[in-house]
Image (cartoon, rainbow over all chains, first blue to last red; front, side, top):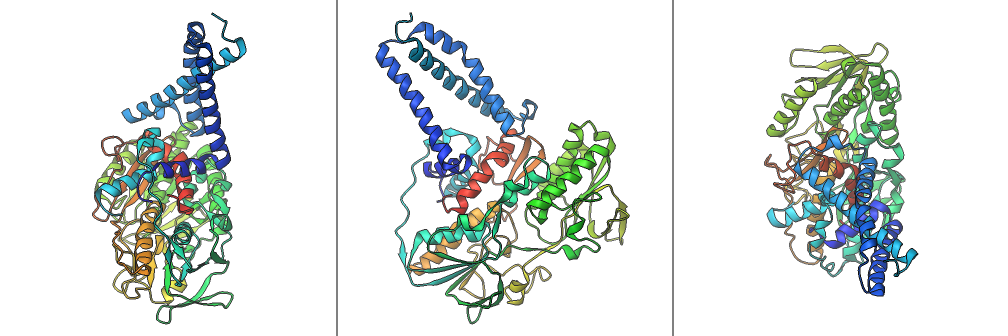
Length: 117
Length: 438
């Protein structure tokens, strides 16, 4: 297996988290994404009020993701050494922000229901 | 470790994790080649990184072969983790797993060492007295740490009176951390260095010096520690460009470099180390010392006459073709990992690139073809320069830097992403390699 293939990455991620935890995480991510699509279709519109809360929660998700990665890798912000480091960090923040926003939107939709506007 | 296109792709496979999910766009994996039917008897000496991964690969590629793995060690050690353990970042258990848990079905594991090897009769005798005839032998025995090569040293000194020796194993790495922790609390003179023989992971001795400096600084005790690194020749690292970069970093961090100094004796009671130099022996007092011993091929391998006859005479690395890793005098024998007598790389990264070469030549021959894969000397060293930063140094036989991510991850820059690879991506990649999946 000499090429960077999707199967290699899956193999490495399975080793990183343990096979069970990795696929559980994938399942959770898929579930939340599925629920997001579900509430969008159910409500037939994007609720701007929920979307506002989701947007406001983005910095929390971003900071949480960055904090988590720094904590598990014994790193500090002062370890950022070059542009690629900041880009990776920004990517981590972005993933955290978007993921958390979707989660917040979904939770609001499920808890409050569609007639919340 | 063949050249450009596929090679770059495979380096990414090894190191690419931390680079992020963008890589997901890469193509899907092709199906495994069809299994080759054979009745060959294949013996693998050693269940370390190379032997275990090869057992998994061959079990997947061959049908009907008798594959026997010989290794008495019931623990498998993730050796790239030893530095992290010795820096107090991971517990000893981080590097320990069971040999058995990595082995595939259909491979017989004999938990004994080799006691004798006859390359002419193609037979291996085990310490338990079993005789294993082979059609192909893969020597993946690793190397022997020659602790007795340092006068006055023994492993029971580790963890007391400032003596550290993290090469000795996970538990010793943890004991080494306790000494480093004490030293960076109290201050004093810290000595580092490497032996004159070839060694596994030539970066590890340097990393310990960098980590000691960083840990002392974090504790606010940098002014109280004096750090000296002893190089075995006139360079800190085999590649000139890397040597100069390290010299610059040592200057910046206030780590003194002494050249042509090889540790030869230790007086643990008086805390004095003796170094052999071209001008005669030199003694130095210390409060902390990191001992890395001379390294050689295991006795059984040396006695079997597998070594080069015109080089490394005191070390015994086996005489393999640098490109195919096949023994030059005994074509039924391949060298894999640290034992291979090639001029570069006794690292897990090198093992990763040895594997497809040996697998290709062996399986192709069994299928009636000729193997085509070649090894170009690739090795990788995530040179930790402080906790949280490393330089991802990759190079080949020609002393060229061979960055996996040219223009993105600069090999001579201290970067967080390179640290991320060492810290979180390397062990899973290593484990996937053991299973034959990477």
